[in-house]
Amino acid sequence: MKTDTIKTICAISTPLGVSGIGIIRLSGPLTYKILDKIFVSKRKDKVSSFPSHAVHYGHIVDNGRVIDEVLLTIMRRPRSYTREDMAEIGCHGGLLSLKNVLRLCLEQGCHLATAGEFTKRAFLNGRIDLAQAEAVIDIINSKTERGLEASLLQLKGHLSQEIRRLREKAVSLLAKIEVSLDFVEEDLKFIALPRIKEELMEIEKRVEELLKGAESGKIISQGINTAIIGRPNVGKSSLLNAFLREERAIVTKIPGTTRDTIEEIINLNGIPLRIIDTAGIRRTTRAIEVEGVRRSKDWLRRADLVLLVIDSSQSLNNEDLELIKGTIERKSILILNKIDLPLRINLERLKGLGNGRKIVKISATKSIGLEDLEKIIYALVWDGKVCSSDQTLIINSRHQELLFSVAKNVKDALKATARGESSEFIALDLREGLENLNKIVGENITDEILNEIFSHFCVGK
Ligand SMILES: Nc1nc2c(ncn2[C@@H]2O[C@H](COP(=O)(O)OP(=O)(O)OP(=O)(O)O)[C@@H](O)[C@H]2O)c(=O)[nH]1
Ligand SMILES: [Mg+2]
Image (tube, rainbow, N blue to C red; front, side, top):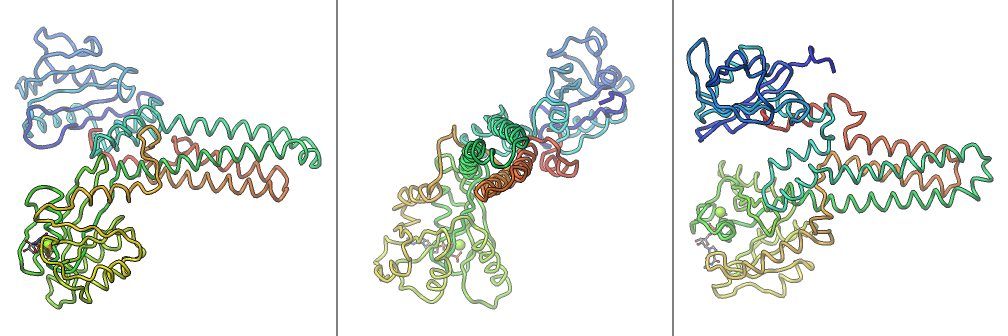
């Protein structure tokens, strides 16, 4: 890239609001020239002459007027986040002073950074690959220590290494196939084909393992949408409060108390569980409740896990029955609440209706059975998946889709070998698989996709 065409960008990198300090970040070729005009150190020497990776005390000055007292950190290229000349101005945290310093930087020739532009530059300048850049979003969004740990591993290149290994395998296999293309078909069948098949199967196995780890990664980084569903007054909001161990949702004995969905995240042994308390589902004509019920049903469709709450102190009514039957195909747990009251429910019948689903007895208000419930949720979430952190890869849906395509490409190649097709066809599938692997780490990727990926970042990162 030619340096005179690269813009120097700046942004406020800390959250907006009152805080102890706030940081403005600059990156690009004019960083130090711009700072020379607005930063005054005690000894009045030029920022351009400051040593790198050091912090300098001084003032930001606009036409002789002091705007803020700051600490300036200098990071010269290529030893910086973006591999460009960079600086961070540590201002006092007030919004006004940050805005004033930012305005001054813009007036002196900086451009306002777009979302994720610093990280995008780190990628474009080859400091990190795309999978690593995407890990930065996950680190920012991490909700549990475990999620953070896995994202940090990815930033270090955990996924990238796996992809690199797969690419190496695919490339060496392609080379072998291409060499074998020089031989006549008959020879190929006897000499190369079994070996090709074996190597394709190895690649297939690894891709499948990665996809398995990806499922766990998704759970850890994005969490599980867990909807608490049930007819009115069964104790859904009480259950949310019990999970949170605080009075978050309003609980009353009046059916129809919850009108809108309430979402909270709890940490279940490292899994972020996004719990959604919903309005009780029943037939109603009251406009507010109708809208609430519509939202509940919407969550019922979208949730990864459904906690269906049933009042054990009353016999099952039609609304319960509809919900129990309606969730038969879903990952769901039947929760018998209010077991501190006399039991009025026919357990045998419920078992039959539950169709093998777990039934957990709790009292949300008396804190009975909650630990058991949490254990059962945990087991259901991990059902058949790997859960050790070294095998867990934080893979977003983009990576996952590409890996699915790779799996399909390899399967097609295997089919071609089984049919005894010309190795040109096998090579074709394999080459397509290789391209898909390349896209994961950001090679041959279109600007449109890049922009879409980085638009999920915050400004200043
Ligand atoms: N005895 C007993 N009462 C409970 C229990 N859980 C909830 N309740 C009571 O049941 C009533 C309804 O509780 P909520 O948590 O508001 O029920 P809900 O399902 O959210 O109700 P809606 O929002 O109206 O759909 C309240 O009076 C609670 O105190 C329980 O485990 N035992
Ligand atoms: Mg409620």
